[in-house]
Image 1 (spheres, helix red, strand yellow):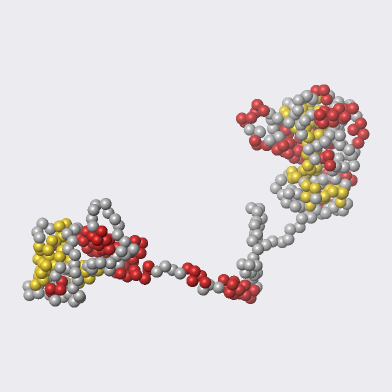
Image 2 (cartoon, rainbow, N blue to C red):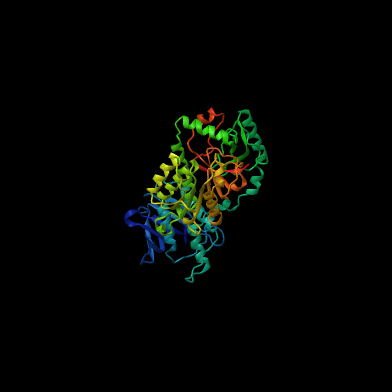
Length: 478
């Protein structure tokens, strides 16, 4: 029996004092309980003596490295605890062993010695070897550039990474076959029946679902139906407008418009407050039309925009002068055209006084207006009540200058379509609710002058604000 193990490579652990030896078994003496190794390695270093003999009393652990040549598994290890008595080795078939005079075998045993930590399950080592074997292949050899023979390189790779437990892992997983076992229609049908039974809303099968794309400002949760006609008037005008979000804004007659302003003034929204609010909204729109933050920067003070204000001696003129004052406060060169009148409204006089404190330029003749085009013209010549102003020489001269100047025109609080407009505007700004404007009014905007909802209700208007987060919104013809 002892002769069966001659030529085998073994690893003998003699404890911390003597260390670990590896080598080829050359003799086993059962009577004296000794074993001899040829070409031994001591703790991974080749011994200077050609042969070492161990007594069973010194052996703490003995590992037999069973090596098989060819393409089969070429390394396995068996561990036997040895005490002070005779060494018992299980009987196996003798194997042919290749004699290897290289420290690579010692490094193999040294690695296994570190993996065999007391209390650590062997399944951990198998899993480690399984990963290495599956990732590299059981018989795959890494070519070296040191001229070592392919068989020896293959032997070292198999000793390090080989494991016979991984044969079943080489089979690929059948994704298509397993996917065919999944019946999606049946699963969605069960989900649909379950949701209907529980009273939940059915999501439907994938064929019944219709993909929907939402904008960044849309809510994906179900809500109440949207009512786009939130403003109703007792006497609708001849035109209807709509906002960017689709809300319908009806036009109103001039009589209803005046009644709405009169009720608001009776509740405390005085003419001065209304003029101031209109001036703020109009100036904000004017600053935007002039370029907004792209033009009004500290680095661009040498290119201050120029605005020409054409105003008459009425409330619309006072609103324009208020707008000019706010523009001048924002570093805009404002030129105010206002003819000399013996008597003007108190609101116009007070607004002119405030405007003169801004350093803006006031002229009373069209000849004093600039010959070169300005950046923007704000038209406040028209009045809702006095249509005879269009026949005045100063009105016709100012209108002719505006039409000949190539600057865009913003018409502030223009009259309805029943009155003619001598100046063709690119934009028009209406107050609270628009009047039915003519085609020459250009693009219509609406500004909020702060009239409460109950004031609208007093004149018979059902009103929900269409402004949202803004004070000036664009309107489109419905």
